Amino acid sequence: MVTTIAEAKKALDGTWKNKEAPAYLEAVRLVDDTITGTCRPAIAFAAFKKVAAQQGLLKSTRPSAALTTLDQLWSRSKMPPGWIPISARASC
View (cartoon, rainbow, N blue to C red):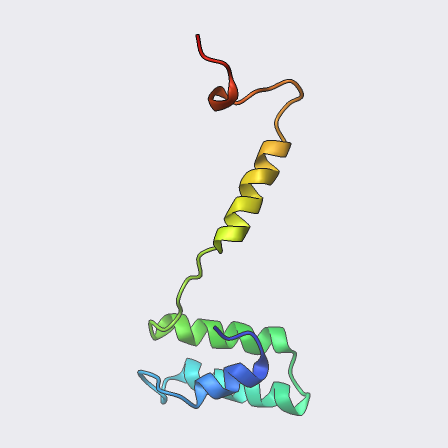
């Protein structure tokens, strides 16, 4: 997972399907420009993500088990007052 400009630089120095592709060369330039302070990190990350997707290297991340649990708990807390889920109701 790439989360910093330094990690993007290291990843770009690694193995890519086509290091001559215009999008790859642009990402390298923008990451280098960000390191020198002449480009915003968000722009470099967008270029990095674009080329990674184009070359089939972008992996989608699934939410962690903890985040999934928190999402479920939050969803339950947004239910209308007095609402009881079917699974929590007494059965006959």
